[in-house]
Amino acid sequence: MKKAAIIGFGTIAPVHLAAIRSNPEIELCAVCDTNEAVKAAVPEGVAFYTDYKVLCEEAKPDCVHICLPHYLHFPVSKYFAERGVHVFCEKPVALTPDEAEEFAALEAAHPEVKIGICLQNRLNETTEMLKALLDSGEYGKVIGCRGFVPWMRDKHYYEEQPWRGQMKYAGGGCMINQSVHTLDLLYYLCGDIARLHATVNQLLEYGVEVEDTVVARLEFASGANGVFFATNANYTNESVQIRVAAEKAVFHIENDMLVRILPDGSREKLCENEKMPGAKFYFGASHSKLIAKFYRAIEQGTDDYIHVRDAVMSIRLIDAICRSGRADALVEL
Ligand SMILES: NC(=O)c1ccc[n+]([C@@H]2O[C@H](COP(=O)([O-])OP(=O)(O)OC[C@H]3O[C@@H](n4cnc5c(N)ncnc54)[C@H](O)[C@@H]3O)[C@@H](O)[C@H]2O)c1
Image (cartoon, rainbow, N blue to C red):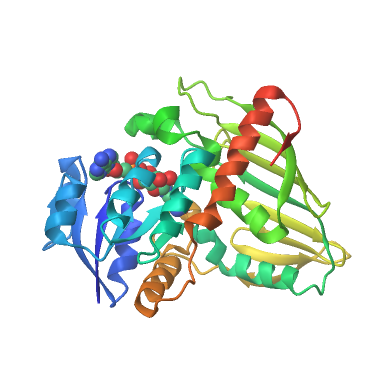
């Protein structure tokens, strides 16, 4: 049995809480949030703190779940890791490539603790099957891919938590906060991206600093081509779409389903993601799966989880897209 604590008890925290409560191997010992108002939602018998350093000292958790605004991910993870506490940190891994490298160096310097990054969509059943199909080589090389994230965030989303609209605290908008999962899956599934050309826009007039719409043309090291489109300015929240065209088959993920597009244009269903009851559909269903895997890795001393070093590329890609957008130029990764 491991003692867990949640640091940051805002929007995403209930998803971690549900995963912890459904796992008999984990006991929630404490919660920390600077906003005392959230205390009312903390389960009875669980200690509440407003200072994570005091929580560390008094509650002595084995593992902390970092559910904080982006700018706090690295410093708070570092604080706990240096005190021998395992860390399960929400995405994004960092604000900038330099910070992501520093985080990876911290991970390497502390092999006694595990630091897991919550890029949970790698564990969706549809992702796992598509990766296995592509890696099998049966369908030939990947020719091209696309990742579309047509989402909507209203003004209230930025007003209720102003850090989400500020570069200093969020590090960006529709990429680092929303579509980082899809960017991550494009290189996870299709291999290294060598260069890209992008445009980065603010279509919404919310008075926030962060981008809301991005289009990028991706050139993979293998020679494959890709298109990435992400927006928070869509009329509504639609399903993420990921399509991969290989030499001998075309695969498509949408609405939590993986299909193979047959030569006559019809779709053969290959598998469907497990649903997370009661949650917003765009959170995905794999938080619990990844959290269970992370605690198994702690228990059994294995390496089978998403490491800091696995997530660094997502931040390098976001940075490259922003640089390309500013310069209107092809950028090398
Ligand atoms: N993996 C996913 O699919 C997914 C989905 C949504 C959000 N997230 C991530 O979860 C993280 C949190 O996002 P959110 O939408 O829940 O944010 P939020 O603003 O709703 O919650 C953050 C909480 O942290 C608290 N906080 C701020 N500074 C603190 C400090 N110094 N010490 C303790 N508490 C502090 C705030 O009071 C707030 O309650 C972000 O990194 C976000 O990107 C991940």
